[in-house]
Amino acid sequence: MLDKKLEKYFKRIDKDSHVVLNTALKSSINDFILDTDRIKDPYKFAHHNKLDVETALQLFLYFTDGNPAPLNMLMYVDCQELDCKSPIYLDEWQSHDYIACLHCAEQYLKEDIMRMVKVKFIKNDEFFITKPPTCTYDILTRSDSGLKPSPAIFQSPSIAQDEMKKNIAGIPLDTLTTLNTTSKKEAISKPLSELDERLSRSMMDFKIT
Ligand SMILES: [Zn+2]
View (cartoon, rainbow, N blue to C red):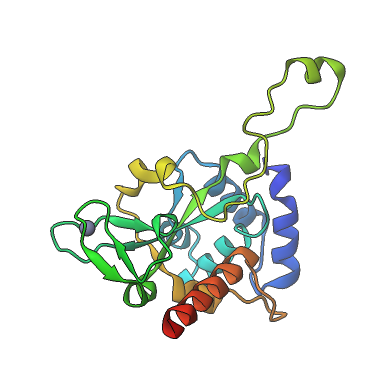
């Protein structure tokens, strides 16, 4: 059965994209997102549904729109040291010219490493939490912890660390920003276009200083 919360996403895809959303594809997207695997593999999804990777990525982008959204984007770059290769997460980044890998301490010039940002799609459990109905009993018994929407547009690395070791390829940020347009020439994923703007701005800051 389709998750009710995904309904508005299917409607938007129907309206805004070239993808023909038949019942089988809807149900496949639904099951893929709700699956217990936290990190979602767009290549596996594309293969399973006989879609080209670009179409699969565009479909994924639709589900990253909103706050909270069904999928979060985890941004990182791979450490370039051959015997390290650890992910350096975007939210570990300092506003300095150099950033360091937390595992091998190798330092990178921010300008160089920004072109290598990759993205993994992660199921956002918060999106699927159903708020209990407001009645006296619920107010007295329920705990509000975990129900607040997070302003973060990327997943906290502490949650994803174990799963990051699984062999799921990250998608270059450039590839995603190129695909992030509906047939009406609007941004599919507003969080992604905002992030892209933020990165471009910080690149400019870097050049000025
Ligand atoms: Zn390293």
